[in-house]
Image 1 (tube, rainbow, N blue to C red):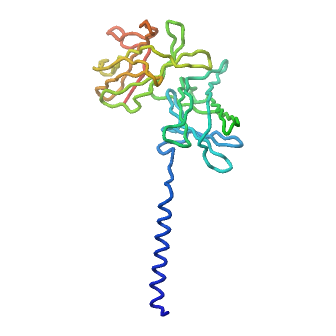
Image 2: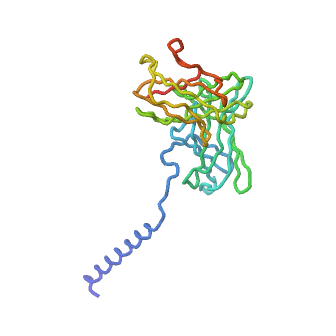
Image 3: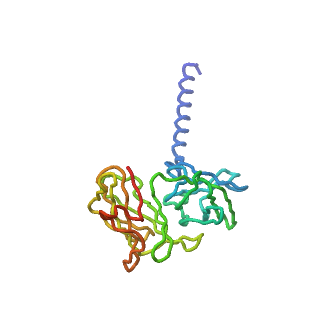
Length: 283
């Protein structure tokens, strides 16, 4: 066969092979990054596994922390899809230790390897030290544990507060939403917990939290169409927060029990410009 006929045949064969390879690649499922949009906080490592903790900010801060968790096999570098896990945050102080409010950890919706939960840190040391986190987990009926120190930084605004009510119960109240406030009527969510003991902070159900937002730098004016926060089935308290302009807002609160008895907090008046129970927003 002459060379002028051989070259076109080789070109056609190579082109067909390339097209076939491309078609085969197109048949492969796309690789999905299940932590896209998140930043790693910290790795917890033992001899068998690496437990990765992720969040939007990439660090722990005082207040509400929404945390994603996944576990990697140190031998295969693959991530487990099925496991059970719980956590215990502990604050070490000179004369005592205590925990803080926390959720269970469940499989994140629509994810294969990512689990999700929250921790509410009510305090930090000046240097962020003092906290540790223990992770207890089970894979294929085998139990594992890992503990490490963590750093909790102070949030700029007061997004969590602790107080003792007139019922002699110590409460923790944390702002959950809005995380990105806007000039509008915002959905406001908070978590309310009581200190059952130094290591247990169960959710408080069926109370009422009154809301009176004010702008101290603008004559302490309020805003219209706010509603009190009531308990919802997701374990949070929800109401409407009206923000009429950007700036610094104090969210004045009162805690009422099932009989509408005020346990803590005061109404805002000319003589009393701020409640003793409050959270802060600035945007």
